[in-house]
Length: 284
Image 1 (spheres, rainbow, N blue to C red):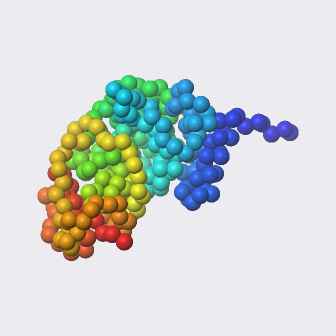
Image 2: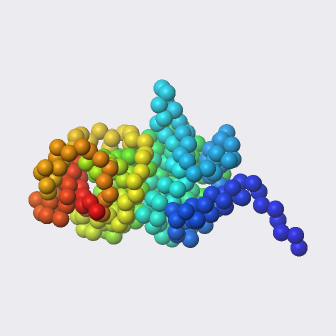
Image 3: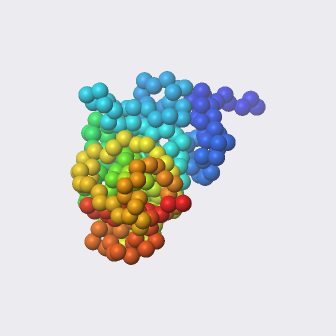
């Protein structure tokens, strides 16, 4: 019997994932299978197939000459999914639907017994994502045109929360949404340290990092984007006047601001105090 000929998009998809595996970016077999299953090109109307499966970010919305939304590069998506570690049956909250591609990957990973709630500030993006997800028959995804920095009534708690735009803080709504033992992943800008995709696990009133990756994301928009300025505290005060630079992070602990104690400085090289959260950062 002659084996069926693979469609070109499936070939490119397999090549994309195989390259991520060969270069050591992608290690998880379940995530690899999901990325081979979900056609990225279906979320990028009008984009040539070769571009859709290249390992780079692609702008999907431009306003007044500025990119306001993009689809992340596959390599960064793989890294963030490994930090998030979504399991079958999980309930996942995604902040920043964008194209809907990431939500489709999450739907594959949580399976029919799990669910994905995804929000986007722009109703046009939410509508396009909802249509693409519907065409691929992911019935376990709910797309909301909403500000992801606000509470989602009746939906909490979630096993996993993922933010797909750069943030300076952890919004109160995200703290409230995450169950004990759950994971939060977000691109986090930490003054004095740089921008990192950080994976956290919730342990009571603290979030402990389980992995960090340098990254570069578009800035978050909406209510959670305007949370105010940072205050920086160094274990070595002499570092306050040193030039800011990207530094290799060994770990991050996050607490709500009202739960922050001076002891955070005992084991941290830098403490970043934001309006909602305080981050204790240790460098390698």
